[in-house]
Image (cartoon, rainbow, N blue to C red; front, side, top):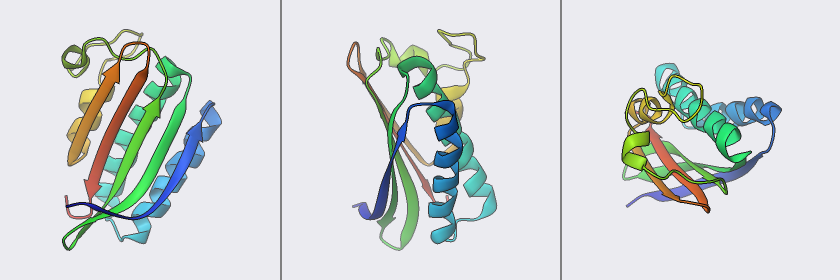
Length: 137
């Protein structure tokens, strides 16, 4: 069972919010003594997801949480937007797929960088992506 120890909610409405968000994620990761390599993986995955949120949904909100499972601590990030949604999640999770002018590495790349990844989306209602990076993961 995963327990939430502390959390913060960050609104993303413009490009400048991304820097503040990244700094906040780093603060949370440093609090739980996450190593630099795992911090970098977490922040890279988070950056991809927040940029997707801005590009395709004009922003949204992200919950940053310190979570615990037994003796293991980690950071859980929940990205919620009210954008157009993703019509085919399986296709969106394939390397190289993009509806924009990107390389199509955002979602599958983010998934590879974290320990837990889930995505739910409904056309016309938005998307929720949840990732967890464990301290020792």
